[in-house]
Image (cartoon, rainbow, N blue to C red; front, top):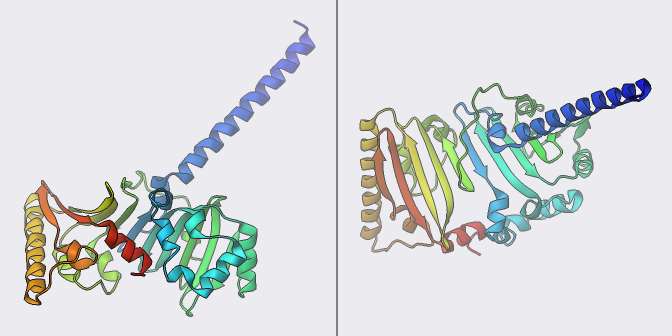
Length: 308
C-alpha cells in the first residue's frame, strides 16, 4: 500500500475513533441526565414530599384532555402565559418531578420548550436572563422563581426565597444509587416529617395521615385498572410488628370513617372522597404495609375538572 495512502487511512481511523468516542459519551450523558431515576436523584428529599406525574402516560389515557376543561386552565393569567410562550402543559409537558421541601419547591420538567420565548416572557415581566439562567419574582416577596435548561428538553425550576435556588438541582447528583422509580403514572413519596410540612390535608384524610406517623417512608401511587383506577399505599415500617400495627390502624380508621358517615345518614359516594376512603383494604408482609383503594373514573373526572 502506498505509504501516503496508509498515512491518510490512519488519520481518518483516528478521527473516526475520536468521533465515535464523543458520540458514545454524549449518548451516555443524554441517558444519564434524561432518565427518570437520575432526575429524581437531583431533587432534595430531606423532610420533602416528592411528586411524580407522567403526563405523557396520562395524555395517552385521555386524562389530560379533562384538565383542559378545568377552571384553573381557563384563568386569564394562564392563557396569557400560553399565548406569550406557546407552552401548554396539556400538550407540551411529558414528565413532572417535584420536590416540596422546607427550603422551597423544586421542579424537573421534561417536555417541549421554546427557550427564546420563555426568556422574552421573563424579561417582559420584570425578570432577567443571563446566559441560560432566568430569574423573576413570583406572586409574593418570598417566592423567587429561577429556571434553566438542564437539557433542551428538560427544565430545572425552583420557587424559593433565594433567587438562584435552581442551581441546587442543576448540579450533578452525588447519590451513589438512583432513586426507585414507581411504575404508575402518578406517585407521591414522603416521610412523616415531609407530610407535616405540606400543611393542611383534605377533609377525611387526617385520620389516615395520623396512622402513618411512625412509618419510615410512604409511597402513594395512582394508576389505571381497566376503565377505572387504583390508589395504592406502600409503607416501609421499622419492623414487621410495626407494619402489622399500621395495617390494623388503617383498617380501624376506615371503619371509623364508615361509622361517621352512617351517623349522618349518608352513604359513601364513589365520586367523592367518602366513597374512595371507605373502600380501602389493607395487608402487611414483613416490614411493609399495603393499602389499596379502588377509584372510579367518575371521581377522577370530577377531580380534574373541578366538578364542572
